[in-house]
Image (cartoon, rainbow, N blue to C red):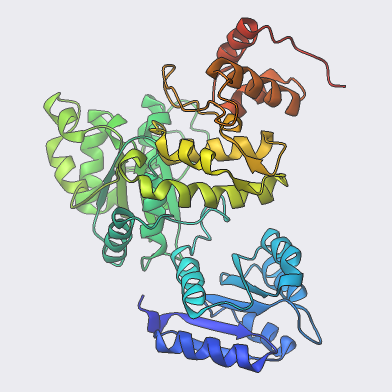
Length: 449
């Protein structure tokens, strides 16, 4: 959708602010409406026809927090709400974000700050995401800008898309973005992790079955294709599908008909297909594990997502975003990263990509007990046992990698009352590895105090 299709509502009792915002946003091509009356603003917002709402916290008759609760808590409107706040109400603005606001602007703000907030809100129209506070495609590098532009061009079409890239690069996030910007946005987005499907049940999972079709089929069941009818089906790690299912999948794509197991007549479906793989599908074709004709069907529009180490300019914007999210979520004492910690994050190679960065930031928000994060508070696990990271405390120069890991594990154990399974999951390692590290470091299981 173009800017002229985007509708913005401004609710603020200060006429000069309303008029200024209207002028700036109207010149940019948005449809803008405004009101200085809080109750009238609530009534307008409840119509749920706006993409973004600018909402002042301090207003007569009804304050912005009460309006926000009505909009997000009681009615769950789809618009992104940006809070307008003064210096004295910043804590309220932070609380507003916990109540469902997307962002806040502090008075006085510039035209560019206003435009930036609106653009971020429109880019992150992510009501279908499991974590609603997590935005889409964070980053400002040339690469990320090009990726966003590609997604915008691709989304309005119904073309099949193949997304490739290493694990953790955000393939599903790109797929969801394409769906949310498409004409199918109000229909289901159905993700399927093909690597987790049991081989002998894969056909039933994808295409559905009728009662009695096989042993254990006690009732009829829809497959993922039927669930995604008129929406988008995302097949993650498609290269894990067997050759037998690949043949049936090819026919489904060609005919837009699904062969439900145990039923002779196929069922018509209207599904946009997006597939993803962290393997080189051409190599799989050469090895005889993937059908070449299916590859050409699913890769009408290919998108390759680069690993994080190849667009390092996005590391800090992504890290800062997740820092904001997890500080609020875990009520962390952390307020900012030290310059040394930032250098550490940027210099690390991130074998687990954005997923690893997200997990690393969440861990430090949970475990760090001070406002400023130093390098010694950042610990990287990566995806391989040999992954190393620059974690020596630059202030003293004496802390070794072993010291840092031991300290980190002890903090995590204490935080989770020495529950081994919970701690191991949080640290991103398995229970056995955690036990070995505890034994090597002489860490004993202590009962909660």
